[in-house]
Image 1 (cartoon, rainbow over the protein chains, first blue to last red):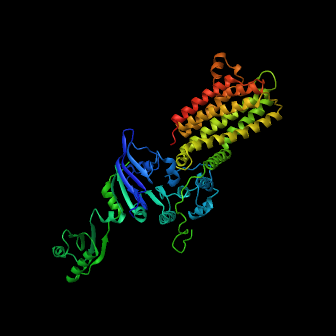
Image 2 (cartoon, chains in turn red, blue):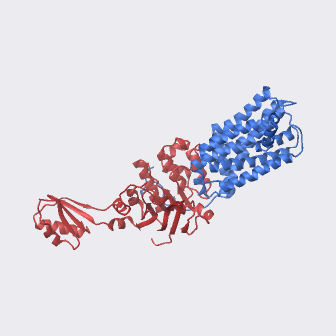
Image 3 (tube, rainbow over the protein chains, first blue to last red):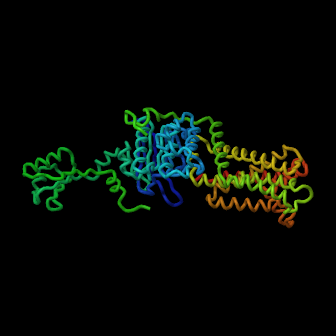
Length: 307
Length: 264
């Protein structure tokens, strides 16, 4: 999908006092779902809030749907939907009342009853916001972001603290938004969420995008994958290695437990099993360890804890 | 949430973008209606805006606790209670409500809605005015039953109420937009209490030492209650001095609020 970007950030710099939150960040988000990942304090929220018009860049440019979010805010606001990480609702307002109010600020809102029903909020329309559970508050915030029928939705950790059912319901809705042509910018700490939903993933660290691409591409690149199998101890690894493509590795980290490293593709798997057949070995518990987004993330952003 | 035949819970195209802001007048009306509902639903707010003014009016009219000078006590008290009603809504109530809206991210969320900031402020003002109309009707009815005989022209009264509202709104929003919500809650209530006692609402200013009178007379609550009393009790014309004091507070307060208000 090579159409016009929905978000284009170039050279974004944002400092708070002496601290640099974003240090020359470049990010292009195309139509579809873009997940923004990063450790705490990496600059995710600042970046997204710059796109929403909350923060004015110290330098660099931000364009959302081709507009400057600060200077052209009036034109941009009706076209985007924003889900804040928390709050955003009068503590005394009822859930349905608040959603209906946000709908009234838009020209062609969604059907409020259908949306509340869809998100499993049908039963709490008359419940005061402060009496909703955390998950219900999250879903109300999501509903508020989409009710105005926006072109682009910003979701800040939409499933934080949700139970698995609510999490799936949220994912389904996000997929339906995408199918209907709504673009989504999503920040999340859940790698599986990004893998499941995103067309494109941008990993931010220390105020910069360190890598961006489709999740399957990110998982393929970077570190090599591993094939493991079991067999009788003491097999001749140098013989196996000769059969494998150049650059592969093969060893026996524990007696009877074998490990092959390199580009693990169907061809390589066939080569290994053929070698086993030739040597009268029944390979047991063959497993291919595919790198997850989490491996890529930890590899790029380090394993030490962030503030 | 049952899945449809295509695996979706809703028909394809349900969420197809169709963005657009509602007409400005509809947005402002909706916002003003919501703000007013929030205010009338809040028990603590009603205590400030309805219960306390009513109670003071009835109590001090019936029992001779404070020497209110010559004439019926209610003729002295009613203008002061009207001033108190304006202060309770435009200053105390608005400061507390807005402070917590800021704290709970309501202002942040509304800032990215199609409603412009000035539209939100207009809606807040409308909501304050609606509440004040309700308060004025209530206080007037009660005062009349207690034997109040108001004098003077309604235009001067209206002018005083409007300028008073502007002055108190500026100060209330300044407080809400710069302090933490809890600090606003405490400070707004404290100021309410101090001005209730020292602002000529139920205690005539001439009960205070002359030096204090000069200072207290410059407070917005004193200017408002004094102006209202000049007109409603003594049948005076337009109280320009009091209006001038209120105008200065209004300009200074609104300008400072506009300059220092922080939305998050």
